[in-house]
Length: 266
Ligand SMILES: [Zn+2]
Image 1 (cartoon, rainbow, N blue to C red):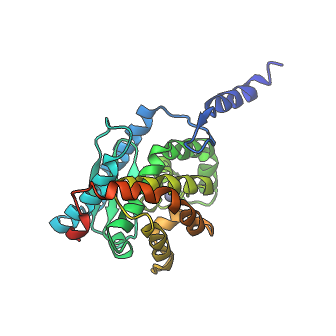
Image 2: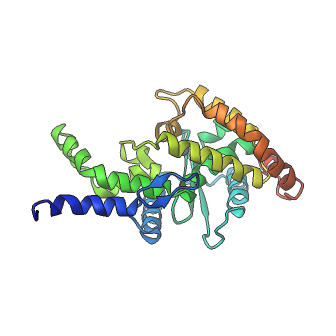
Image 3: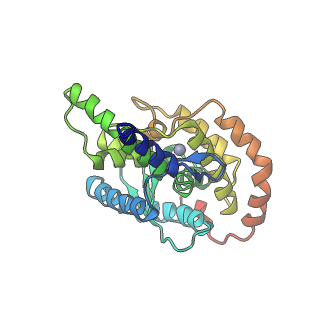
């Protein structure tokens, strides 16, 4: 019997952590505390800021700040102070990290044609953080990481550090060279929550469908970087279209109260 213990204990540990529930009622395996996951977000953000070129273009920064701030203002947890950084890069990409960090690449601004479409992406990214998807992804990386490292060593590609693994898991795959895409259910959850966030922040939710159509059309060698970590699925546009009746009233309500019209800054 005692030989079974080492096998049983990890299973208990993992299933013990699976009692968490996502906002849509899915079971989640979360191995890290909020504090730990926020620290990973803080550290990853610091690292990216040293790797990427930070935009000094005042108009662009003001525009992105305006959209992001309106989204973060409607979040339930007011204790987190979000910072927003614009990166000068052709990448069609954006991310949000635990600990309150948002990064937007200037390449995205060519695909997101207006403030409402940019709000679609930022709302979606922030929703991943709110729904603990970052924690879920990092937990998954932790559990499968050893396997990945072994496979990597077998291919002679050199070691992958835990730090790289966490970066990739936080949706920052393009920075470390390998991708851990979000799952279909996580993507749907982020779409649903994101479109509600944008409507509450006074952005037109019908633009969300156009954004994802533009994203699918966007060219470049392998397509937009954002789609490599946020795989699109065939039902995305249908799901968003079905959401419209629910979120339109929220938009109508909030639209009249919004003073800060970001679109004028573009
Ligand atoms: Zn996503």
